[in-house]
Length: 512
Image (tube, rainbow, N blue to C red; front, side, top):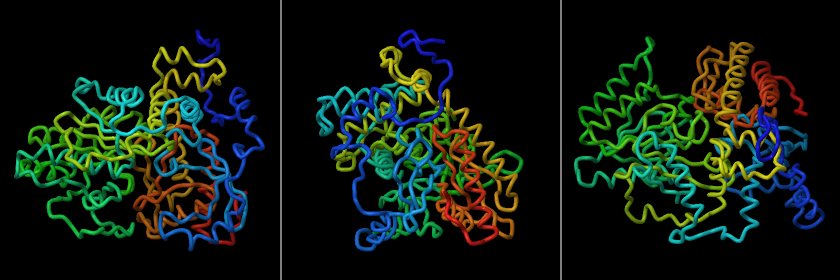
């Protein structure tokens, strides 16, 4: 069916990713930069990857900041073109983990980059201090809050956009819940759950259990005495809630007057990507309501598209009092996290709510563009799209990727996991998780789930050209909405090579 504005056929979206610079109108701008210091194709340094890698010991601390052995040159969608730094062997990496958790739209999403480029070409300030407002700041807040309008009027929720990462958001949520309970001195306890992960800040790490498998340890403070770690909520073999889960609900019901908050991840990614049973969340919501306990969802990993909706409340019909989320907000195009709270949990004492990174306007542009991509543009803005946009992109911007791409990609992911289980039954165990957040158990020689094997698969997979992560005893698979059938096919071949090497170690050639 031709679009009334552009005359283009927008019936069938084109799911093939493309670089923004491939559009002719953009290409004219890029061509004007060629050969200059602004050349988009220029390299930022004249050293080889091997030369860079040799300087790691003098440039970087050990751990997360050390440059890795895979070197990225270009990227699009779920693929990264680069090389193995030590050997210079070229590799096309397939990203099956959305760059850990940032890029729900895939790498180099053209619409987000186009929106940011348009903003940079404007005269609007790229940064604003917290006390200076802008249309964009309020526009983004309204669009996000409207996603929860079915649970109450939009003005019953408020938003804090002034966080930079998920740890900050979780910390601010707990501060808000703590302040709301200031009139009830008995409410000193926080309920958390075994297997959860809430970030790397001091407060966030203190509410998590130590996990030796990840080298976790307490920073500055050994422990706190008011955090109660309940067992991870699970179902029994018959399908109902387990006895431990029922006991957790009973304990909260019995001693609810002593708790100021319950903090829970709807999908515990480090706990082998375990999805909390919906029945537990529903009954937990009822207990928290009866006992006036603040229910906090940590959605840093699952919000903004990974379970088919912007917030988990939309798909589960269980609405928390506070949502803390980040990362996927900008799909990797800026640092931003948010806290959405019911108005009675909106106050945060200084200095905890006074982050100075509140005014990065490019991040707000990015989250606004991500909302366009996930849920569709506002009708009046869609009508004003430039006619030179590719038809597939225009179609997705009309309907939103949650309506067009999400069912397709989740279906391909289910087939992908089932195929791995069929081809490698001695190594690949049951799948877990929900939507695009999935885990697949890795089995050891004894047939039992093995975290050691999962870690080996993640390490070897990177060398074979497929990016997955270890999550407990599972391999964490979290594809973006831009993942195509060809991506899954290539990733399957790469994982098959990884599994073969793990099962039958031999001299290995580098991937082409």
